[in-house]
Image (cartoon, rainbow, N blue to C red; front, side, top):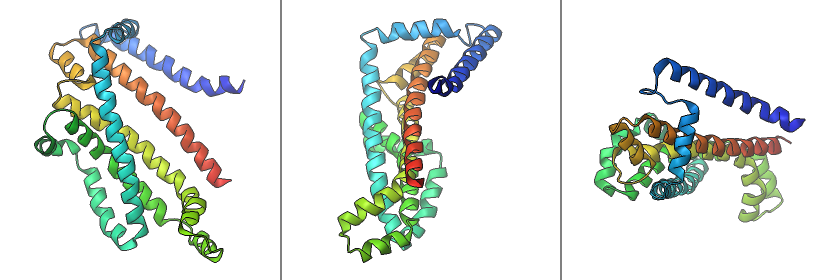
Length: 249
């Protein structure tokens, strides 16, 4: 019964989206929007084609590399800035300003530095995801309850014990929230990188379909990316909520 209640909301939302999609198709027609069932059938056909696999692999590798850079570098820089208050206070407004800047304006610079291909996509994806990870990590480290630190010192914990028993449990929920947001923005940045300058990947297929006015392929790729993003974010959100419940207990 609990599982049914848990799934009721997502199922109702999915059904509502499919009904809205079908209604929009009937209003706009096939030239603007294919119906849900033909789109899913076209997606299934694309997945079964051998030439489709290298494009998915290209996008997946670019995204995973960009995500690793955004997460690892973001947490590392955030911990350093959060641990040194003056550096954090100086860097925070700069990072917020960079975060609000449309990253697409920096894409010509990325191309000049990294050229066409995988490195540019990885760099552009990491550029999108790293700043929120830094900001969330810096805030988490800065807001650790000092009472916990004083208690650790009074118990003469080593730096490693202090980090494992106090800092990580105290900061992990907020850091993970930053990782979750960084995940979504890194995916967005990777896809944007493929849209503007790429010779392989889902973004390349999408731009090719746009040039050919292939509506079925456009929607099929959009559905594939959306499904991946929704499933991944659902898992990350569930972990995030469990970490917050554990820290509150």
